[in-house]
Image 1 (cartoon, one colour):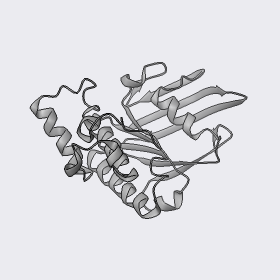
Image 2 (cartoon, helix red, strand yellow):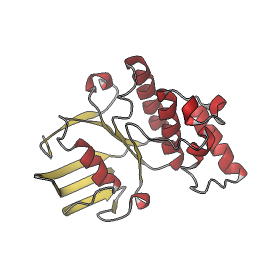
Image 3 (cartoon, one colour):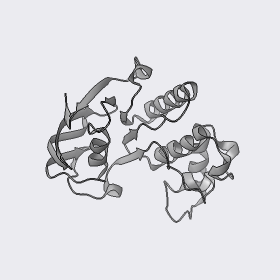
Image 4 (cartoon, one colour):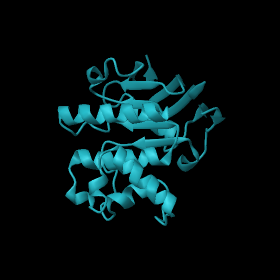
Length: 211
C-alpha cells in the first residue's frame, strides 16, 4: 500500500520551479539528501500542508490532500529545533499532542506517561524545557509526535544540532519506536552515512527535482 504518493506536484519557490513525483510504501523509511536550497524542506512542507502546491496531487494514506489543513493530514512533523513550548512542563508538552487544551482524562494521562517512558523521560515530567539538554528536548518532541499516532512522520534534520553519539542514540530510538508502530518515515538529513543499513532507501533532490 502506498502511504505517500505525489503526482506531478508543482510548486513555484521564488525563482525556482519545483516538481515532485514520489511513491513511498506503508512502513517504509526514506532519507532525503541534497544541497541547501535544493527543495528538501519544501517537499516536507508540501506533504505536511504548510505549503500548498500550484498543481498536481498529494495522496496520503490513500486519501487526497491537495488543500487540506495540516491538522487534517495523517502526518506529524519534527523540526530541527523549537519543537517544545518553553512555558509548559515536559508532561504538558507531550500532552499537547493529544489535546491542545491539556485537559486529559485518566486514560490520556496514562498515554502521556507511556510516551514519556518510551523515550526515557519518565523522571523529567514536571521539568520545564529550560532544565533539559538539547537531546532531551528532541525526545519530548518525538514523544509528542508518537502520541499523535499519525501513520506518517516527517523529520527535517531533527538531530543535526546534537553531537554524533547522541545523534546516533536518537536515530536508533526513532527507528525502534517507528518500527513498533509501523510508521512511515521521511527524513531530511545531511548525514546519510549514519543511516546506512537502517533505512530502506535514500532519495536525492537537486534544484527542486528528485533525481
